[in-house]
Image (tube, rainbow, N blue to C red; front, top):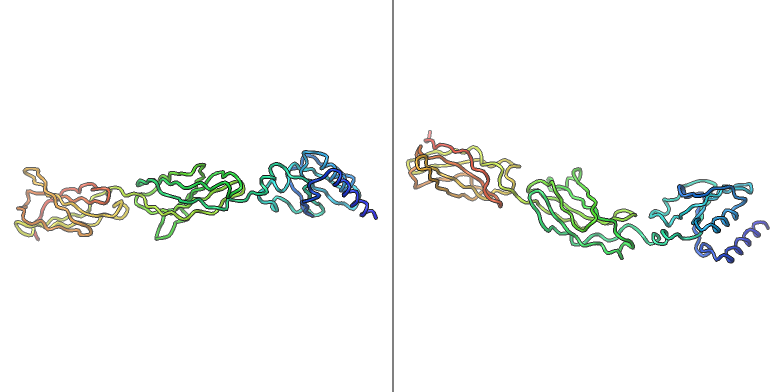
Amino acid sequence: MLKYFVFLKLVLVFVQHKLIFAIQPTTKNNHVLAGHVFQAYTATDWFNCLQTCHDDPRCISYNYQRSEEANGLCELNDCGVGDFCDREGSLFHSPGFVFQQIRTSKVSAVLSYISVPRTSPKNVTMVNKTYKSIFITWDAVPTNQTNDEIFGYEVEYSIIEGGQPAWEKRKVFSVPDVHFNLTGLIVNRRYEIKVRAYNQCGNGPSSEVLWVKTDERRPKVAPPNIIAVRVNSSCVLVSWERIPNGKRRGLIQKYRVNITSKISNETTSREVQAPTQYLEIVGINVDSKFTITVEAANSKGFGPVSEPVNITAVP
């Protein structure tokens, strides 16, 4: 009989005040919303706690500690579960309590439709690059696909080693715009780049992968171990070794062999296409009065000239 009376009393109050939660209440047994209590007191019963929350416009929800006795702890909250992206995760297990939200705050009215961005940025494009930087742009994720403004974007990139991204070396940057300049990169190396949008609820899906290789630079050093041997009075065989990895700064495309007279200081040059690493100089009366130098070139041009070597006779 008492339970029926309490239920009838609640229905009458709901009709009288036209409470929102009479249509769509949010109730969770054995849970509380913690950290948002602006008032706590000992209520005479559950209805008293509910009525107090309803009468205070600041109160969006309440936690009530049910007790075998009439009195119970009533905590009034200034927000509800709709104010959080993780609605279930915002409530904490607390045996003996009941959580109920009776109205919708302005924040929760918006957040009730918000989730992490569901769309990835499109058209991630390399606009410009150097030997140590890559400038990229992408299309903004439309806000009508996220139900809120985008807070920003995360740009994630990693160098490619052995054909695979070296994720232990990956870097992530948060940027407010739809462009970013990746700097401090390694010359003539391939990078994997991804972009994703984020908001207050977290990160959205990543874009399609963009692979970009930084520019080459002119070779850092000259070809090593140059040998110039006089085969006969009108023929000299010049050979050299490859520039070591990490110092080529790109794909070696050709070599240039320079023959310089010690008397006139005039230089004659011949080019050799890589991967050939020797040159027979024929038709020039070369002798000990000449020196030989070699330089290598990639797509950016020739690197430094080697130290001159003297022509030696065949042993």
